[in-house]
Length: 328
Image (cartoon, rainbow, N blue to C red; front, side):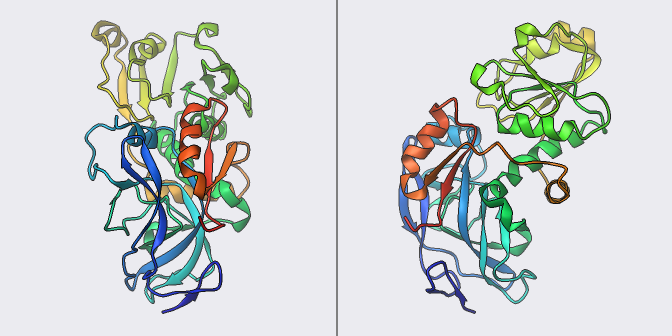
């Protein structure tokens, strides 16, 4: 099987190496070529256009603070927010060459761990793991993972829209945007960083100290703050629920008596499922959910080291996208 690549060169079963972002060790990140796994009959090869940088899980991988996690270890290829074009497809793949797809990473490198394996110029992965997205989305197509995460976190509360969302980063904004599509009043969003309080679409953003409410029914935390539970429990109504939608590097704890008095429930929002991605993609395709205004920074993949640093350190950076369209 053969297909035409980005510069007209032929790509044959993933035999050419890909350029990949590699974390050699904590705080040691760069680009280097890695060999790709050979394609199987149900696989596709994707020429990546854009990869998003996660300021949650990838920050922990970069800093070395990631708690024990399946597949953890260095060197590793990060990235689970990639969008690009199918340049080769196996006979059982069921997807057309040339289609624009989102892929949540891949396990196609043997010279580095794939956690999560999507930050590379080219990927080989099972066709069932990719999802077609409109070509016109561009870099915003890489946001499908966070959108599906938000949809999954909201879906577990038995159709009850959240009263409060904590954090107005990309995940918090997507949670709020999807929540406004649900029955009930729009949510309140807490944000302590003044530079992140703008951009609300149909909901209000407050500093926690400005909010007098103490009877929220559902609170979704997208902050990743391991010390936040007591503050959230104090704002719950009896029988209320806290949903942990962030990723936490340290053990979470809370004072038991206030939670006991409220009969509080705490739910962990696990990873999104394919059904969440399909439902979210449908909302985007029908124009009900906008992904606009969330990608604030772009950088050539060749500048990955500086781009990751900016994504983690610049408070004005909501989402950094690496551009792979020009070969590093």
